Image (cartoon, rainbow over all chains, first blue to last red; front, side, top):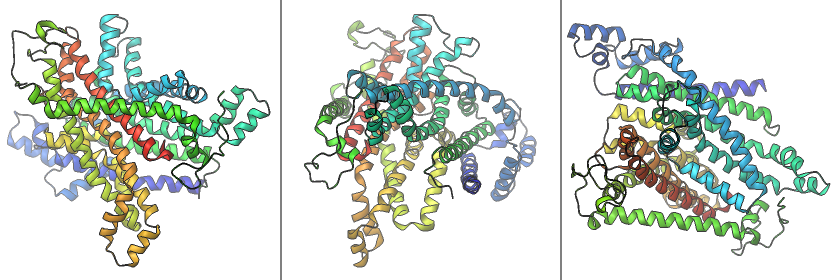
Length: 306
Length: 304
């Protein structure tokens, strides 16, 4: 087990390095002179030159790359061109909002998605199944930004039930969380349905039913346990798509998380913040994938961790 | 509770040998109802796609007006007012006209992005699976790295770097569909390289590129077609979200996403402006997803 964990952790190091390299290359693609952007329009050429030197932009590309990697290892992401604050602090101050949003959305998606998927599998080929299956296709096809706007129109403008934007009120999170949850909910319901159908058709389920076990026991004790592994993978992958969805959802609802910070940083041309955020999104996904893989090996005794 | 019928059924009419029980389930007569529904929804999707295709191809012939022309005396008309069935926008432009001309951008961008994904992803996947070894490792690592970024983050980062233009939107959106094609084709390619007909071709001295082009890729296409259809839906979503942010096609060009982004400013006074283009995007994505699912059932029952 320990060897497996160590190997799996080591295997993600090249990916993380690759993620950092992609971000570095992306930053070099950026139009304009970063030193000039940071110095501002009114800066003298000497000031720009001074900033260029302090940022190491006058050095050869390979040296810059080395600087970049070594400062990453010390969690130094530079300073924001917009506020002058360290990028890491900018991100840290916004991150709790995104984590709160994503966690609530994921909880909604997992609970409702699992129950809906199980219900659809048990009541296969009934109206309920059709309804749930259509709902999950709708969820996957829905433009998040449009769903958000429709929710604002209905719940904030027409019925005046919920705040349209911001994070000031306790109810502010309701609409963003529901909006963000829908896509993952659809996928989880779908995966649960097909995974449950597969297991429900197997012999041991029939045996359990034949010996007189109540339906609830068969579904939750026998079937769900065995159907859970592929569902877990899908749930793990949802972290990534929730982070992506958060970019859109936060912008629509003016939710002050890292997703909105990313969009703002692009409009403000705040490249250090943008670079830091892209890096954070990529790294988070790699780390979550790693954790899901390890959990998978831990839960499924059939996987030989060698 | 619905117990499934015993798995011992007669082989598929097509004569597919030794179907596993779960595959047999999909060709069993009791499942006919469900397949009918699946196909019915695929037919609905196809119908929507056909309407959109007609709008995009023949729209300018049916509505020979300039969508860039402003009519500032008739701004924010409601549904059906003054003969404008879906009303007009903040510049007094007819919403239907905008939708029709916008379909060219929205659908065209999706189509080109998926085409880019196919052109890059399919050969890389085939090479990766067929040759194996370090080539495989390099391509798979690159795929992992690409998959690490949520598509919208990757697209926003690329647009910020490359600048806003139609071509860059295609690149930004297309790149995110590459990994799925690589993975799919690689899996089939791994399987196909062990097949007798490929081994025979190798023994006959057929060059590797020809084996890939003639034997490997054509036999790996079925799941690719399904994935391309589903990717199309996702590409439309992603391209429209860039437009929505104001980082894709720029308003007042009538792309559906940018229409939606602009409508956001008038959401309190004229919510219809936000409802209509969003519905158009939703219907398009839904159509591609329904057809994709139908194709999956039709082409490969094992995947459903």
